[in-house]
Amino acid sequence: MLCLHCRGVGLIPGWRTKISHAVHISACSTQWNIKKNQETINQLREETRVLQLQLTALLQGDEKVVQAVIREWKSEKPYLKNRTGQQALEHLDYRLNEKVKQLNALRHQLGLRQKWLEELQLQHSLRELEIAEAQDSNTEVAKTMRNLENRLEKARMKAEEAEHITSVYLQLKAYLQEESLHLGNRRLSARDIAKNQLQYLEETVFRERKKRERYLTECKKRAEEKKLQNERMERKTQREHVLLQSDDTLQDSMYSKEEELKRRWSMYQMEVLFGKVKDATGVAETHAVVRRFLAQGDTFTQLEMLKSENEQTLLRLKQEKQRLQQELEDLKYSGEALLVSEQKRQAELQGRLKMEEQRRADAQNQLDRTMRALQITKEGLEHLAGKLNHIVVAGPTYEEGSPGASLDTKDSATPQPQETGRSVGKMDPKVDDYLPNLLGLVEEKLLKLHSQLENHNVPEMLRHIVDREFYATLEGKLPSYNTRIALPVAGHKDKFFDEEESEEDDSDVVTRAALKMRSQKLIESRSKRRGRSRRS
Image (tube, rainbow, N blue to C red):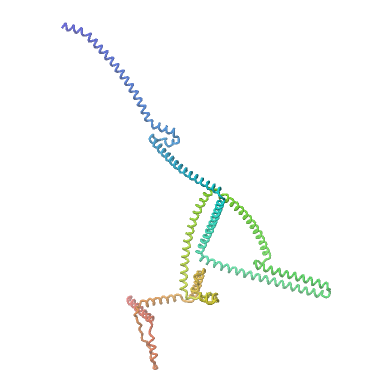
């Protein structure tokens, strides 16, 4: 026990040293571990901060890209303001593709322009060579070219003038066709208006004539009275001074008498001339005639002014024509400008030609329709005239000799007017006024037929025509083998009965139409009786 206790007492300090050494070692290791862990924590914190910075940079990359693009492409700022990086890149790719396409198109146009420029340069060089050759060679070629160009210009001017004349004639043709459509109504209205105007003018002329006649009679009466008074005064003076006059006084009186007679004769001529002037002008008053002549003087002065103005205008137009002709001569050898202008002019003329052809086609269609309408009207009038051929209208007709007769005798070639009835057969369809003459003939026949029908009972005539048509239809329905039956004639034979008369009476049989009428009446009477019996 004591040994053990000694060993135990000796071992305690060793264990203490070991334990302290171990504690010291463990304390050092923990500090080292803490330091190491602290370094690790700091390193991890640094890495975390770097990663956070990278993350924020990545998150802010779209905005940076957009801002960078906006700095480089300021014109695209409104389109990239609220877009992401991917959308901005897509938009930039789209715009880049558009710019590339535009660049390719411009390059293609540049190539075409370069080719066209080369062709034009080649043509220009050829023209220069031709001009140089023409200048170097004889002047006959240049003269020939100028003559040909002048002829071409004249031909073009004539063609333009012909086109203008054609257009004017087409307008006139269209106007005449339009007028022909309304010719009937206008003709009737014009006829009525002309009749009314003619009646009014006749009445006016008659009144004016009466008025002038009354005025002339009054003037003649006054002239006769004055003449008688003058003659009385002359006789009286002659009686008073016949014994007192000498030879000189007689000569003076004869001279004065001749002067008076001349004065009266001049007054009479003036009155006659004034009467003719009044008859010509239709004015009965003197101041009106004077006013007419003054108005004619004003009209003459106005016409003279218009003539002078027209002469000035004509002179100005001639000067302008000369100036334009000079400009035309200057522009003939302008080369490319003339060619371009001629090409434009040719295109314009072709367009006008197409328009005129279209108008011509329309006018031809309208003419065809008008000709068809005229042909239908002509056929209708000829048919109506054929229906009215039995009506004779009196009027002068000109019968021309046949060609064979004209060969035999020369006198038969001249038409001889004859007062005969006019008919359609006597009209020549080839004459220009054939249709108006035919229309007038049909109108006269219809008027004559209307005047004839006014004296008849039209309902009775219509009933008679209906009966005739009915009997004609019955006759047409009967068979061809239908025979006539002679009905016995009830008559008292005379004692002087002759055999020949009996034969004539036997031969006088009833006609087919009379037999049909009797049978029809019999059928109608039987049908009426049956209807009455059924009703009863």
